[in-house]
Length: 155
Image (cartoon, rainbow, N blue to C red; front, side, top):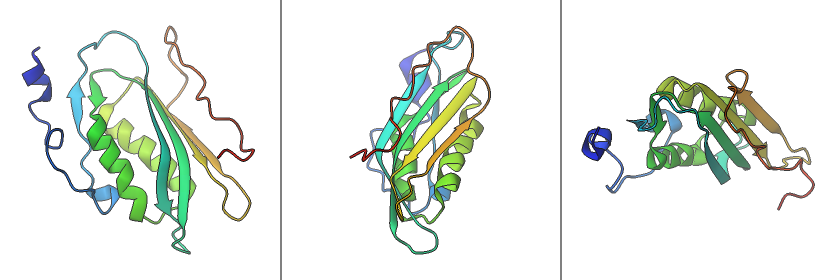
């Protein structure tokens, strides 16, 4: 498999791409996994994730950690960045944002395993942490702790 074959269908990488106005409009892209058949974990961290409260329109902020063990595909990171950025003007509760991101990635990639931790900063004095996982972590893969401590003034 050549690099051209792996990357030839990408539409956003290397091109000027506007931030989608809504997560449903965002195009998530995948590439064939050049290490398919090898069990390893991929981590994406988005420490400045933002969305809006669907009731008040006030901004919500989170530190997201996405871990997955790929099978045949990898998510293309620029498309993931644009997808996550599309939540900036999207109104949804913390739980919905976190779980929707996880499910969208599972639907795109069909990974061996995926988990997402949404570590939300307090609103009304209460931090909300949301966790979604597709099942038990696979054996034989190093799965480190997500490294985000419980809220104690995270900033």
